Image (cartoon, rainbow, N blue to C red; front, side, top):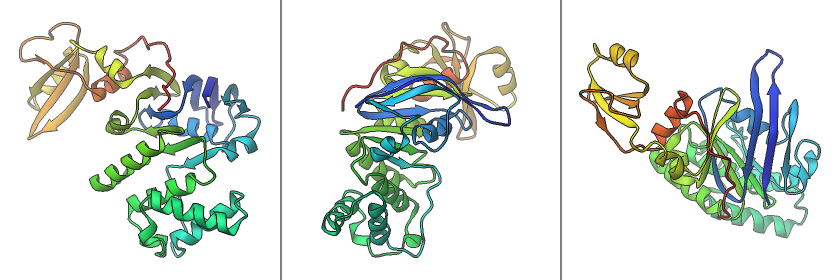
Length: 302
């Protein structure tokens, strides 16, 4: 099954152009959608999840018209939104069983098997009787994935899933998503570059409602080879460096500011050439230094 988005646009009543002619093609596997807050990622995800209308454009999932046949989409969709509410006094097992009924699993025996399998898959079986209010952030997110997987979805949308997780829970969640992504389309919407680098074989960068760049992470990184330079700057120097060079990022390291600059040749004394990474590619794209996006590529079946 393939997801095709063509010229999707959405303007909110307050005048904000949340989506502007967005086009994208995604096949089975992990697809990372990067962008800063306000880029339009959540609007795109909510539109694909049938929770809001687009103004124009089209989206198809296989032979399903996503914008017009919402019931058909919901039968093959799993969705973990950024803000996922839970009933704190209800156990994980009971809520998952209730949600399974709503998903159409009418057979009690089948429902029990499905719920048990999902709790095992998300490593929550040992705490299935505990109230959801006692769960850690990572456990809540894993429960969110469990409910999203009810009904064997072919499209799974997860919006900012690792924000606020500690390192151990983040690794567990990554492993879970990687396992799921071998069989279905998984769209991971995030502003955390490391999540996309570690999980996704295909990605896109959005900003201000527009799709700026699509492709394989490593291919995108390689396009910056020989163009990323680094130097350390004192606080008093920083404004001058930013005025003279195309600075893509700054980071405080042991009291000194590490500056990354985009330049096709040496920016001058004190700079050293460094191997680019996905964070450099992301910031260079957002800053407008990577102007020509590669032709959109489809994702290889995972």
